[in-house]
Image 1 (spheres, rainbow, N blue to C red):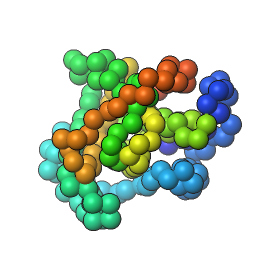
Image 2: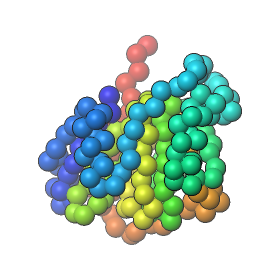
Image 3: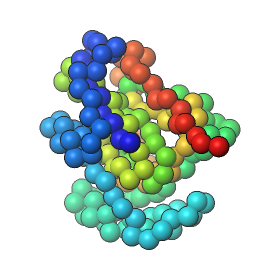
Image 4: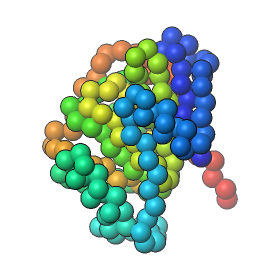
Length: 186
């Protein structure tokens, strides 16, 4: 289940607000300019589907967003718990940073945690399958995929070559909760 927790930037131990209902999360994030939507596939997606098959299943929503926001490129990223570089990839975005373009992610499968630092507050968003998050350029944030990442996400870009993290140097991300590994049923 998707979740939003809002903290005061100086009180990482106590969430001031916790929401679990999608419409309430979207409304709260909308107040600070963050897009949060749910998408449904137009056709079934099977495990191991190709990038083209995944994109085709969400083509109408992708096209709508590309037209609305001017995104020029789309791709699919997939990480599994056994990925040999998972620790390095996780570490890459655990520190607070910004981008010169929007960061847009749609979770086809699995989950990831975006944490945003806006106007003295910290917005901790657990994104699950079906969630799209759009973080505007210049927004301070960090991303956690957990120690055992498991997700497939569609990414939209204005300029794929220009998407680079600019680290703020603030250690705020070290003080807030990390993403817990997903519980798997055997």
